[in-house]
Length: 619
Image 1 (cartoon, rainbow, N blue to C red):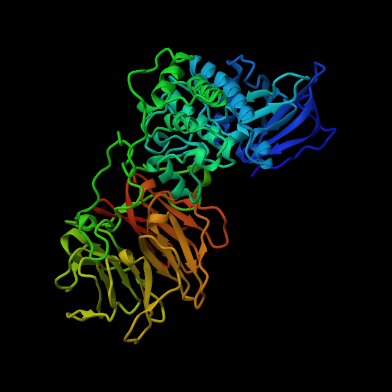
Image 2: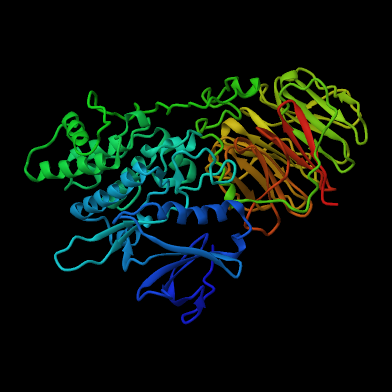
């Protein structure tokens, strides 16, 4: 969050500060007096901490560029921009009033007011599109509502072109893999890696209409629930929430929020005209039919509209299109499980969400060597688990070859450990004594091979279903992510029966780690989060990793730093002890990292493709 650094009476770049208008993630906005003209302006300052960030600086500067080329009564004007004392600023039109998000605090809007706001915003958006600019962040908070004279309609102005994009640009302004638009108003294609076009703004405006009429966005809940809503859930019916609205409104909103943009209303004016018509017909007691709504809508400002068929959302449960194909997961992930054949280990819930990264919430590691090495394993076939002990002996679950490999410290020759009858092993763990523990996934069991032994032992876990991660504590307690049973089970040292740990609402847990205090860390993979359960505790905590996409392996070092293989974001993230912001570990060339391990020296290991990579610890 930015902060307000200027006080009333301060002069910045010639502008006299009057008061703070707002503070956001990129900086602060002040009401200021223009140095040359008798008018107030909105002076927007980029937070000093972001001045050296190319992504944020570009977004800030291009906000002025995009808005300055758009001269429209429904778009906030930009007067000037510059740099003062190493701080970037933009002077913009000041609109006395409020914004639609603040107005909604009083409850859902009267339909006539909501439709007026949408119609005026639609004019601004279509004008921007006609001039080659896509807004990409349409939402109530970016719609300003200004005061007007008696008997005059409420002024409506669109603002914040900070993540707008010229339609002919090929380079995104976000960091790699980022999604910077507001999730609750984002079109499905924003999650699919598809280049956006004006129909994405149509979708966002439809979400905004839904919110103005109901007081909430169409899809709410956790991050993954909102994504799933945009991608595959049917659009909620407004008329079911507000009985004073005609069902024809539902048809128009569904057409604006069609999952396939080919089925979507083609322009923002088409959306506004359609909802105006629906309300008008309802008031005159003539209910419009969906097909006539579509055809009449396209007559009102949609020159390229298709009038031959009524757009529909995909059938319930049908996934949205995936123009960017995904590589198939390793073979082990496609084997049906006993408990739930539909869930397979690491074949995760949001296969259509392609690396939604929110990289702006992460910073890159600056004090670790970036010279990674590929370890001398040979013949690997989709390795999953990796583990390392204090001595530096490395264990790898060579999953599709059904074997466990060991690379002794300072050795270039791998050994095959004498496990037998493995069937797609996943997690592997080891202790300083040299004992090795394996989650034999398809066989639904956990094995132990004592140091120096040649015969394995089946540990007394019961009713496992697709065990994935396994971890062992210094005290010898064993922890297993029982993937298909959505639970974490523990086997205390020397015990003959397991215990179920009190994690709640797990969905497809994959990785598990334990520290020297017996605190347990879990990747709740389908829920895209990492959980922490203190030793002996009953209340879990969600760790502040931001916008993970199918987290898999997890590891914790002796200082309390937590490492996560952020599978679909193609990176390894770290949360340092006591921090509230994750960092990205500087591995290079990662595509789908699956597992991560950390040595006492700080060296990090990750399985990626058919390789195991090592990144040295801090010097």
